[in-house]
Amino acid sequence: MENIYDVAVIGAGPAGITAAIYLKRAELNCCIIEKEMPGGQINKSSVVENYPGFTEISGPDLAEKFYEQINNLDIKQIYKEVLEIENQKEYKIIKFKNNEFIKAKNIILAVGRSPKKLNNNSDRLQGKGISFCSLCDGNLYKNEDVSIVGAGNSALEESLYLADICKTVTIINRSSSLKGDKILISRANKRSNIKVINNAQIKEFIDKDGILDSINIKVNDDIKNLKTKACFIFIGYEPATKFLKNLEILDEKGYIRVDEQKRTSIKGIYAAGDVVKKDAFQIVTATSDGALAAVSCIKDMKEV
Ligand SMILES: Cc1cc2nc3c(=O)[nH]c(=O)nc-3n(C[C@H](O)[C@H](O)[C@H](O)COP(=O)(O)OP(=O)(O)OC[C@H]3O[C@@H](n4cnc5c(N)ncnc54)[C@H](O)[C@@H]3O)c2cc1C
Image (cartoon, rainbow, N blue to C red; front, side, top):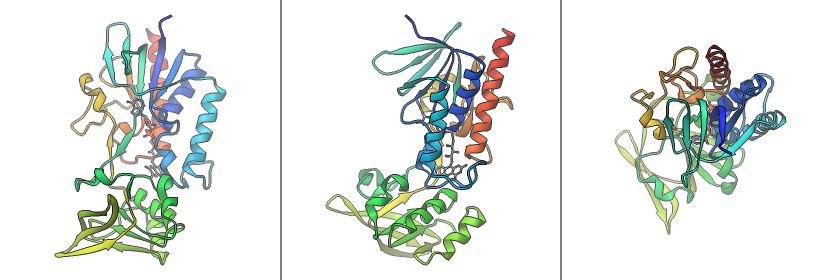
């Protein structure tokens, strides 16, 4: 039998999970599709302190709670990467590898963002000292000297997490001051094993036998060599929308254009969460978007 859904939600981060909860409670035939694991980016957050209802909770624990909720509601989950979407007259065709596909009358895109990479040929050392997830890899560097590239909230939160495990954490900051929330900057400043190098530019990652050993950094006009066992990179994110280029719903930076109710310019396609341009890329804004997108979709289906 062909797999045809009323609504397919793509992405099981906070936005997609919220949308799926609203759709299922409206008794629609829906599914949620995820290429990695439920919870999305929050799986990479060491601690969340700004999501109401939880004074302090680890990202993976919060992801687990979201996951429990979609399981309890018996929401159909498909663990595959979506490679393309074709907008046909009656259905949207959602394509996976090996020519597999499903059909849906409506789609909510909640595919979030992925971390930006540095241009300094850092790829070759990924998993060999260079990491984008302190929660995943921090424990490998217990009592060692590590570094972080970035100066925003993610970089600060993760430097505080690493400071509990590692000997020293050096924040390499391109600008002249840190940019995150004041509460996080003040906590980082109080930690004796967190150092900040401002006005610093990464010039080169240096390896020893294929493993990161040090970094050459340009500070003002001087080149300094910083010994480091690991370098965690938090320099921002880009929307995970390369597979949607054929749909013409993206802005010049790759974010999905939506109206206030999260409708795109294509009938039956909605978008929610970090994949939509906004001022605060957070769990609360993602869940709010997910609810709005689902409500719009439910409303539009009733009007057909
Ligand atoms: C280190 C770190 C710390 C953070 N700390 C906080 C915090 O303390 N508080 C806070 O509010 N926010 C925090 N955030 C931000 C928060 O995690 C995001 O704003 C939120 O997760 C966005 O939710 P989303 O559902 O829009 O996207 P995401 O969480 O990015 O989820 C998108 C999902 O879509 C999936 N996907 C993408 N492309 C495809 C495809 N083609 N096919 C199938 N699946 C696909 C991805 O695998 C992912 O699971 C943090 C983020 C990071 C990285």
